[in-house]
Image (cartoon, rainbow over all chains, first blue to last red; front, top):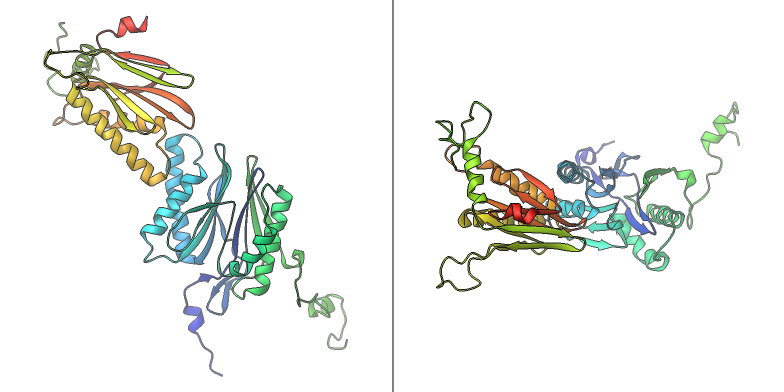
Length: 236
Length: 174
């Protein structure tokens, strides 16, 4: 049997579904957790929501290396900026720094990013920065390969001025829908909520996610059978 | 006016035995002997004023402006040597536009004052440069409201409710 090793050497890409949503009082960022190299899942529990400052986070999609390097640079610049300013940076400044890196290096980078955060002047804000380095301030943003399946969903489900609960439920539902349809998205759902009180990280493993059309509840799972202590597991 | 340096005042890179840099103090003298400049911070803005010195009746009114706009939200009034002041304003304008193109927001007044002060101070560190013979009152309005700063030839910068430099500063302060 000829085992192809081409996949293992392919650059790490995050197929991904990433979402950022504003609500009445802050923002909710959400993402799946699959990092793939070709058809192989290199990391099934990655954290695609990265901290830039205490009040600004970044959702990464596209090339894992490119998005990591951009976030490292911006974190460094923002750190210096915060020291000079004597107060936390605004979300707009963070987004602008990301945009400059994305735009000026557009020939070399392949990464779509969503910046979300809270500052005392503007409140909760979401900025989408897709591949070429455009910056767009939006009430909500979606990105990554899985986002193709969510445009219609958000057209119908999005509304202005949601509560924190509603926004989080919306994000979790959307990511799980995308995971169901997009092969390059999967794993668990991670969310980060940012508001005036601070930052909260949440984690939704597979059994906490809603099931969709034609997905089945696990039946006669070997794990359940084995843990029930049946001596001959192959007899049902 | 007889402050004797006795050899310790020949270069800006020389300290006197009692810890003074005379060249910087002489630069401050240039500012003290020039036309008065005042600045006041109010609840809803800044007011800057300069004493109009008419050196010749042939001069057109409106020329030799000593209040300059630095950016859409900030301005500067200059006292002392006019040409030195122009350099400081040019630098402030450049810092303001550069900040905005990197960070995407208008430069906070505190940051602008620090950059101008650093630049003025820079010119007191090298023997081949001379200190600026002008002091500046910088006013601006950013997210945190109106703010007023003064930068002296030594490079120090403080934030004020009201400031005055030049010949009539004592009178202005009372």
